[in-house]
Structure formats: structure tokens, C-alpha cells
Image 1 (tube, rainbow, N blue to C red):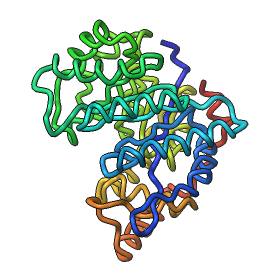
Image 2 (image 1 turned 90 degrees about the horizontal axis):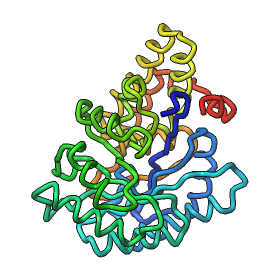
Image 3 (image 1 turned 90 degrees about the vertical axis):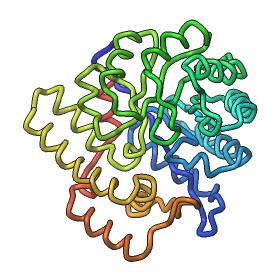
Image 4 (image 1 turned 45 degrees about the vertical axis):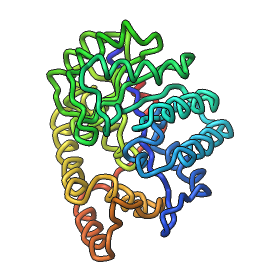
Length: 315
């Protein structure tokens, strides 16, 4: 694994109007804001995008809108992963085929979480079913037990999937069992890409050899991660520790208000109003917005800077 090569995918929000309908016309503005973060790609229709509150047709329209932005952009190649997980495996397969047809670079899926897989073999079987619907592009398993209730050891999954799923390419993991994940990192080596999904532990996982990341805070905290990596590579541990503390202050605010809900408020504050969340998530009240804004002003969030030149220096 190249110790200097870091790949970050921004888990993007779904922009919505006040009535909960999707604000498709905002996506080009969101795309331009994404370019400014310096990240290497986007992760569509994931947890950050409120995927399970969207219909299949809405999810496919979002893919079409973002892919159109990518095609029209003069920026360097942008990687696009599409999350297709659903409790309906036939719809998941349909979304995987659609993502492939739209030119996506890969698909990911959470397991079914109503009729859950009872064994690791059940889990691999359903992943193989969806992966086979788009065999030309990489397939990734999205592990997030806190929301799906499905919790098998990832090292066991990856070993089985590697033999049963021809286009298996790795994991997107949003679970803090770092020992299990470490096993996967050593097993994967350069054969599979493992995307870490808990942004709060970014540098800890980097120290362990992780080089692939997916998360929501990369949308508005890109400067912190760039500066952390630059500090680490220059051996400036004092600055690195300070930066981690500054980022942690923001993580704590996010955890107090739900990361998706508070994240959308941060996007509004930095100039890209993605609107409210859709039920069953609850939009912030005016008072809650004031509290979040006041707390954020006590952090260094609005002081960070990042340029694409800086991020390119990290690759």
C-alpha cells in the first residue's frame, strides 16, 4: 500500500425543499462546492443522503443528476460510488444496474435489515445476488450495524466474499471495531479497498495503514484533514494533536444533534443550503439552529482553508 496515497469520498447530502421534496436544481451548486473540498470522489445515496427515506426512483434520479455534473465538469477524474442497499433485493439489483449504466465507478450495499441475514453465508449470498446484477463494476459491502442490526465479523465476510463474488472490491465500514477492521486491512493488502466511515477516527486509522475514507464531514471539514496529513508527514506532532482537538470540538457538536441534521445546518452556514431533513428525521427548530451556530462559532470551523493544490500534494 502506497503510504502517501489517500482517497477520500464525500458522502453527499440530499438537498430538499421545505416540503421534503428533493431540490434537484441545487445539485450543480453542491457539485461545485464538492470540487472545492479537494476530495477524490463522492458517495451517493448513503446514510448521509437519507437513502432509506427516499424512493427507488428518487435515488436513481439523484444518480443521474450527479453523474451529469461529473460529465459536464472539466475537473480531473472524479470517482463515484452509489449505495444501492434496500430491504428489497430486486430493487437493490435494479439500482446497481442503473448505477452501472450511468457510469458509476462502483456500487455498495447495506444488508437487508427487516428480514436480516441470519448467518454470514446468508449475508454473502444476498451481496452476491446484487453484485451479479452489475458485474462490470466493483462491488463493496457497506457495514453499519448501528442502523441495520446486522453485525458479523468483517474478516469472516471478506474472506468468503473474496471467493464467491467475482467483482468484490472491498468494504465501506462505519463501525468502530478497530481490531476486526485491522484484521481486514492486513488481509486486503493491495487486493481490496477498505473505506473507513467513522470520520472521528481518521488519523488513528491512517496510522494503522488505512488510506481510503468515506464520510459526511469531508463536505465541510476538508481543511482539517488536509492539515492533519501535512502535519503528520512533516513530523509536526504538536500541530497534529492541536488539529485533532479542534476537529473533535466539532464532532461533539454533531453528535449532540445527529450528524445528518447538524451537517445540513453546517452546509447552510457555509453557503450551500441543502434544506431540511425528511421525516422520520426531524428538522431543527429555529432555537436549535441558533444553539448550533453559537457553538460552532466557538470552534475553528469557519477559519479553515483548503486548496486543491494542497490536496494534490498528498497523493
